[in-house]
Amino acid sequence: MFTIDRRPTCADGTREMTRDELKEYLGEHVQYEFSMLQVCAASLHQFNPELIAQFGIAVHGQIHGADYAQAVKNVWTEGFVVHLRNAIDFFYERDSQHKPKKDDVVADHFYPGMKRPKNFPPISESLRRARVRSDKELAHLTSGRQSRGAPGKPWAFMQLLTEIGDLLATFKKLCDPELLNSRMAGLKLLNSTEYTGDR
Image 1 (cartoon, rainbow, N blue to C red):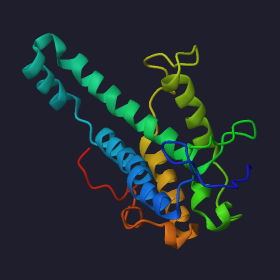
Image 2 (image 1 turned 45 degrees about the vertical axis):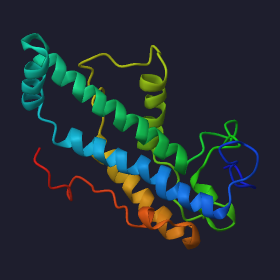
Image 3 (image 1 turned 90 degrees about the horizontal axis):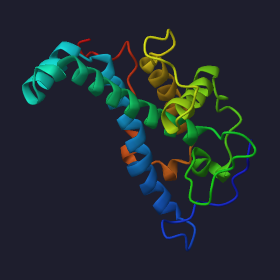
Image 4 (image 1 turned 180 degrees about the vertical axis):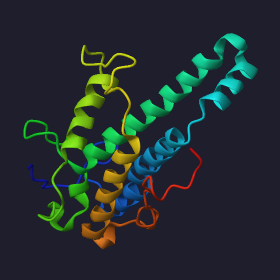
């Protein structure tokens, strides 16, 4: 585990962010990542390809119906993976060779003494695999991309959202309460049993 010994630099790189700026950042940018993760997961959870295809046909013509529905599903999936990757990187360092850059904002900046509490859970194997997979399939063009129809191709988005939601709840309990912005304090990620949208 790396040790954080200073706050991240402000946008222009001239100084460290103040505690007030960190608090605002948490309530704006970090909260956005988690909110968008939930929006993407909910959209995939209730995805209706027939309805989307009808929209595609109405807007683009008959030939685009099913292709359009798949493209829309891909967009929601890619959005989910981008925000998932950012959430994982917020909570967990990659390895000792990849310390945060000067302007990276990570969860450790919000803990008392900027030190991750010992009772914060270690990264799970499913989140570790999801991070590697997001690197291979979304962030770069690699031979590690899975082909259409491969058994492991679908993402377990509700399971991953639930894991991130549990980490978020733990983070909010353990972080410095003076840095917990009200927008972030009120954010709760739903899991598949709590989500009431139609599938």
